Image (cartoon, rainbow, N blue to C red; front, side):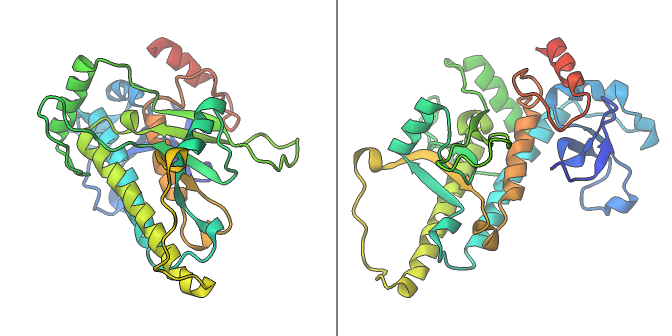
Length: 314
């Protein structure tokens, strides 16, 4: 993300990597970008209300206006991008076998492993890129029907879901994400900063039930692809595909936590960086990269502007 080209945010006037920004253009996305005038704003939904007063709209079009549902549309598109990246990753992994267990891209933590994460607030997997807690979607308490997985939704439905969830929610939602240190037996150099990986809560990450059901379905499909890839590699390792592993019981059963991994072995199978970036951009959009005084920027010169903005907004 830091290596992406620098662009100027029209709201804050800060030059940032374009992966930290949202690109706005008055023309359809299928038109070539070379002939499409566009501007960039910081990837933060709380900054969007300032777009009308800070962006020189007439430079792009005399009749151009900022739509009132712009923030909702951007959030929807960012979530859709996560689902699209999951689909692309699944297709790439389905193309070949999984010869090396170290090349596993996605795995489900056992209940015991998930309990350790909750108790220690750390992820004891050195190759962890992200940990997603996504339980299956229960039936709607009002309609008594189970939500069908759907990546595509009407903006009006998204707005209605956001309104209903904010008005009728009886419990406080968990934070969208939390950064946890990645621990390892090999301590390595004490001069290097400790690695951290985000833990994403599916309930807050995808508040809309159809999209959250689509997220859970996509993760389960990716796990199934990994299982089939291992089975294709069994004949070469001397094991029979018909051999059944013992059924897990108790804390050895799978949890609702999905661990996304990346290392030199997974890179030969597929690149998980686009998915990790899509998740992080959604995290930025919801304000978690800006509204917390705990997370200070070590990559951005004069990063105090984010904290001053956050103090005014929160």
